[in-house]
Length: 251
Ligand code: NAP
Image (cartoon, rainbow, N blue to C red; front, side, top):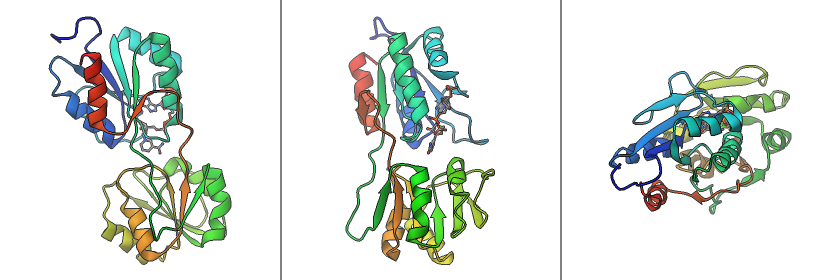
């Protein structure tokens, strides 16, 4: 990379998100920069980012620090999902240990609008504790790895949506929809109406949210799981801002 005197031209993007894919695609236009995307390997057929991709855990913060050194990574953008808290904690520790600059790219969380009836809780366990007091027919959109938290809630019937099938423990009264976004407000409305849903459960993931608009239209409550605490690292909310951060480093 001609204009980069010192640092390595290699950027690591911790991905698994729309933002991670958008950043990898945008980095492909930066002359001389080599962007490696990293995926956890949770899904069998992931949406692949542009350019080189590595898959699987690094082996904790130490493993990631070793990867940064051996691969001569010059900068890391953690574009993982806001609920991928372990990965982000490891990224903060590993980049500090290896002396590599780190940026978090996180879409903003959602904000309540007129007509919304939201109940915020700090954890999946708290959501499971509250859900039966809000309704009986529950649309769970928190992902297959969280379904076990609702396994003991026998008062409710659940519709769960995930990319891949969930595994036990699971609620006894459960129907699973296998689907991957993007979704539409019309489609979400149809799902809520067709299954007579009276509560929507979601993480505060941020981004496009047709399910929230559909819940507002139907006047049903939303049980919203708050994000884990923000890590101590520089953070931006857009791909453009992440590119600006890289530019300031010389990329
Ligand atoms: P997590 O609990 O924070 O991470 C657990 C472990 O998985 C990490 O310690 C790491 O293993 C490995 N890992 C996670 N993300 C990785 C990545 N991008 N590249 C390499 N290894 C990764 O993560 P999670 O919540 O299970 O999320 C896994 C992936 O799914 C992430 O890429 C995330 O962006 C994506 N995702 C998560 C959610 C969600 O709601 N959590 C939603 C949509 C997409 P080692 O310790 O061995 O390095």
